[in-house]
Image (cartoon, rainbow, N blue to C red; front, top):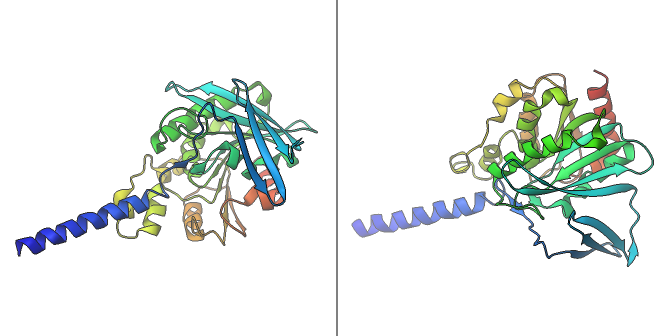
Length: 300
């Protein structure tokens, strides 16, 4: 009998360990980290060969397409700045080439990759007169430190403080745009700095990290994943316009979680349903998104 009980305990311990290893793969962070000596990257986009060289102490990105310098429709400026915790954080500023930006977007990307993979999610906004500042959390890309949700939240506050003081954005209206897990980090920043922004955009986002954990692990999710902040309580104190964007085809963060988030948001608010995969909003629906931002945020 004792041997059987011991055997059952071993099985249960193994099962809990397996559940833990599974659940951390989504709710926590999956960074692509670059060594400071990693300065050249290449990949294919369809039939084209794309190369990125990172130059200088400011980590300036230069893109090539089929060995010719790639001429983007927007400018890219890299910055490398200190946070209050002592970590250095890398950020990119994307700005329109042909016109002065009338909206400055503070963008918080999702829980994986880094600037090199994530900037494309926001770049199309520049075609509509938006500048976009996005950054890598600790442990992502060239940003220093360990990749944890606590550090990422600290970096989000520090990065917004840096963004709000950039000379490029003096007198420019500002919004916050968070995608997926970045939306979780965006809510506390928006609540704290709401007097400085016109509104908040949340795309493919859940209310709290434990919501997505509970979706994948109905029994153990909310036990194993603890929230660093209570976004539901913070949203009660946020009184600027909110645009929630979610794809009805999203298989990463289910559509119902976007609806649950929307229910907790104060008016004025709008829910924009899009199609296709997770986090393709600006890439495929940039006109619809910017139209809604201009109407909901700037017409107040």
